[in-house]
Image (cartoon, rainbow, N blue to C red):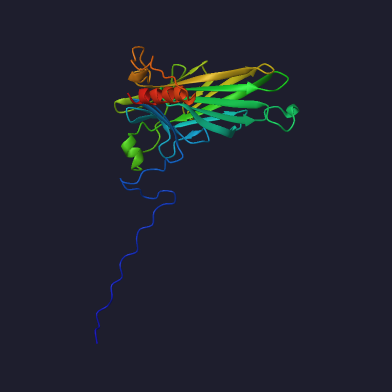
Length: 261
């Protein structure tokens, strides 16, 4: 009779919740992502409009993520996302709504538009449908890890970096890499510890007001692609034909090509 004991293989170590391992060959899902390209600039978003820092979301410059989080709150609430679509090779338009005034009835009275571009800019515009003036608190929460795209794809991006107040916005740095976000108009408050910029925006009846954010690398250079320079040889190209769709097709094709130059 065989008296040798059967040895059991040790149980696999349990991973912490929400920290599933990811090999180098496994990329975060991007099949539903909205991508704007103006190389060496790149911006990746979801259809919700908010940049949460999850997966590959963020503004990039030469494969470095300059900004991972950009969350917007108006009157203490996130806008309800109703539309998200690319309006060009380098930009995405997001539309949301919210109800800011109790006197407006059940329908939303504020339309929130966000135009996010791969050149490192985001324009946030509030459109009022209220019959009376509104003063609305607007808050943008920012954060980044300055991680390399390869590290993000492998799941080893690292923690967010602490922010510092800089000019009319915030600045982050790690080693020899840094990034800034500046705002126009300048925020009324800038809280580095929370990564928050705040404004009080006045909207006349039926009017609008907004904020322009600029994301820049440490050098402060705009994230402009070479193909968007004034001397771009593709700029005057156009096409005509019996089919009215030809002109639009050529314009879109040239726009896509310029974003990759």
